[in-house]
Amino acid sequence: MSVQNNRKPDFSIHDQFINRWSPRAFLDKEISEELLYSTLEAARWAPSSMNSQPWRFIIARTKEDRERFHSFILDGNRTWCEQAPVLILLISEKAAGAHTFDTGTAFGFLTLQALENGLATHPMGGFDKEKAREVLGIPNEYELHAVVALGYQGDKTTLTPTLQDREAPSPRRPLKESIFEGTFSIE
Ligand SMILES: Cc1cc2nc3c(=O)[nH]c(=O)nc-3n(C[C@H](O)[C@H](O)[C@H](O)COP(=O)(O)O)c2cc1C
Picture 1: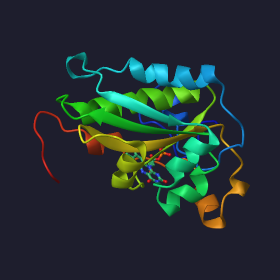
Picture 2: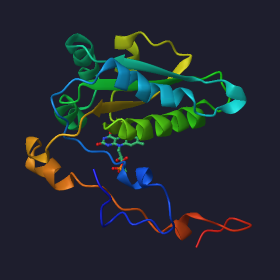
Picture 3: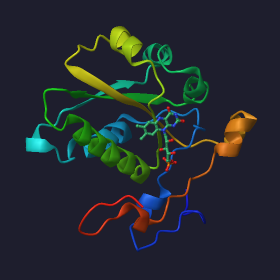
Picture 4: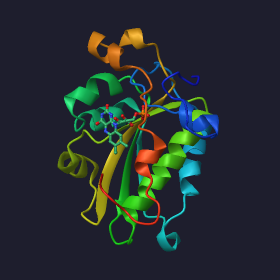
């Protein structure tokens, strides 16, 4: 994975922020226990409100566990994410005040450590949350956020023609459009 032309930062930053993107093609290759747990370890060190660490990670890497995940992932995602050797569902304890913010941060850490470990990630909100709750036995005290496909990046020719066209790092709007100095205003 290398820095792409349409991903030129406006200001100098670490390459990892540019090199991380969400491909859909994964190699049919297992991830070692060491690399999987290293990836999750990074998420452990995310900051959280009052250090509540509200995140939980449900991992699926055996054929049986992955097929259980596939049963609640929407077709548009399932077609490509079946290739991924690991799927991780991120959930959080609702009782913790900033649980959604904190779990998003944990995902950010996880995804950058995955890149450092030579792995690709693709988060998905396109899954049936109620079905997932039922199938995995997740109580109402927890909110379901995203399923993350994790694995070695594969060749895009393994994807359908439509997905092959989309298999590229995306650009971003200019930084200045996200920043407001002093007060907020809508242009
Ligand atoms: C919470 C969340 C939900 C997402 N859901 C999906 C999804 O269901 N299917 C999909 O293909 N990509 C999904 N994505 C990936 C985004 O489309 C992607 O991160 C975004 O377009 C930026 O591209 P990049 O990650 O390659 O930089 C999701 C990303 C996030 C953070």
